[in-house]
Structure formats: structure tokens, C-alpha cells
Length: 96
Image: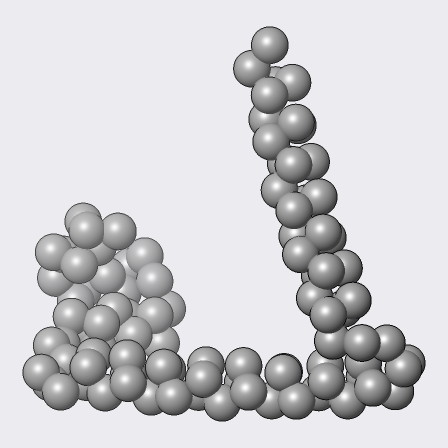
């Protein structure tokens, strides 16, 4: 890949389609300084909103089934713990 970036445009066109050459040229351009911090902040906001919506939706489902929040939390923790234990057992068997 780095050889392609260093090659001249004519050499690139010999190997790649025009669209791919244009895409590689754009990838070489530097992004402005504000770009990555902005993407990070927007991503954090979107993740926070998504987590809130997930919590509200799960609360509605729990209330629909008529089970308590504590019982649901215990089931969730047990399921996550079981998954982690199963993953460790599988990895442990591979090493033996």
C-alpha cells in the first residue's frame, strides 16, 4: 500500500482504476486540526444518547413482562458473567 502512495500518478493508473487513484490522493490530504476532536465529541454525544434510548427501551420491556428491575439486573449480570467464564474455559482448553 505504501508503495502505491509513493508511486507517480501514471504508475498508479497502471495498477488501479481512476476512482481508486482519486481516493488514494484524497487519503493523503491532511485533515484540519478541528476534525478529529469534533468527531470524538459528536461520537461521545451519539453514544450517550443511544445508551439512554437503550435504557428507556429496556425499562419498557421489563415493565411489559412485569418483572422487577432488580431481577432483570441479576439476570443480565449472570448472563454476562457466564459468557466471560465460557470464553475463558475455551481459551484454557486451547492452551492445554
